[in-house]
Structure formats: structure tokens, C-alpha cells
Amino acid sequence: MSQLIWRVVRNRYSQAGLTGEGARIHGGRWTSPGYPVIYCAQNLSLAVLEILVHTDNKRSLSGFSKIALHIPRDKMHPISQENLPEIWDAPFPGPELQKIGDQWLLSQKSLILSIPSVLIHEEYNYLINPLHPDFSSLNISAVEPLALDKRLFSDK
Image (cartoon, rainbow, N blue to C red):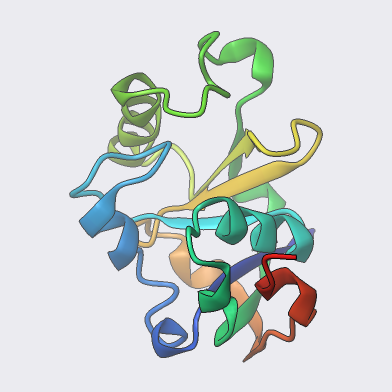
């Protein structure tokens, strides 16, 4: 059984959007720089919110693509809020959370790590290990331009 998840990337990165290169260079909440990982979201709207929260200039929000992925549920390792450190949803939590993702990547325990979203605790983000042996089991069903309401770009 598979589950549909989403990734939103700038158009210029749509071909490289599933390599984990951005996270390898910059790191993220759940992984340190040096580790390739693909950050995705349960819903397209959550994927857009993840972009919005990390964007200082809203006018730069044009020119994005959406990537729809079908992931195998049996290749997923979930982590619940109860099993996360108390600071898991802090705005700037530090390296404690990165160690969780780094250890997961190094263990090769699963292709996908399911974690609660900091933005909407009832929804989930998914980390995908592009170096995992099961990576080829992902099904990319669409890479298309993302149309966003122009009100998202305005300061009014």
C-alpha cells in the first residue's frame, strides 16, 4: 500500500529535487549538513507552508514546482511526538534534532522517516533517504508547475 506525499522546489531544481543535495549542503531541522535527504510533506498545502515559513521575501515565491510521490508505507519508520525531545517544535532547536535524523540515515533502518510537522502538529513531514537500497521503490507521479494565489506574494 502506498501513500501520496508532496515536495515543493524551485523550478530550477525540479530535476534535482529528489537528490537530497540541498539538505546535504545546508542541513535542516532533522539532519546536519553533509547528509543527503529529501524533505517532503503529507499534503501539498503543508509543503507550501514549509516553503513560506523559510522564505523572507514573499515575492520570491513564484517559480516553484510540485512533485507528487507515492511512497510505500511498509518502508516507513514513524516517530511520534511522545518519542521526541521536549524542544522538537522550538523555532531554532539546535543539533539535538539533527542527531535524530543523522542516526536514522546512518542506520539505514528504513527508506522513510515519518515525523510530526512543527507547523501543524497533527500532520506529518517525511524524510526520504536517497542512498537507501529501497529508493527505487518510490513512484514519482508528477512534476508540475505550482500555481499559487498572488495574495501570498503581497505584503498587504
